[in-house]
Image (cartoon, rainbow, N blue to C red; front, side):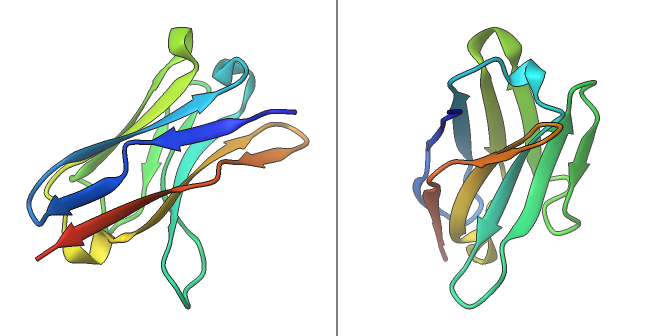
Length: 115
């Protein structure tokens, strides 16, 4: 079974930066898409950023220009660099790996941005 483990969450002041990591138990290059999602209480989980096997990237409009998703295939790790953080970015952040048949989720890491 594929396991994804997120790390790097925490408390940061508005305007600050944080880098999240998603370490996979297998070769992340075997997945079609790796992505970061976030969820706040009472709202559905939403896509924040995604990166494909050919390194194409997509971002939610709310984070474009501030967040950067990247991948290190040798380390089987996907990163989310978050800059210019805002209180509205406060959420649980989840890593997702999408293969041809199955999707896999990590347990999440909490990001809290104070004003």
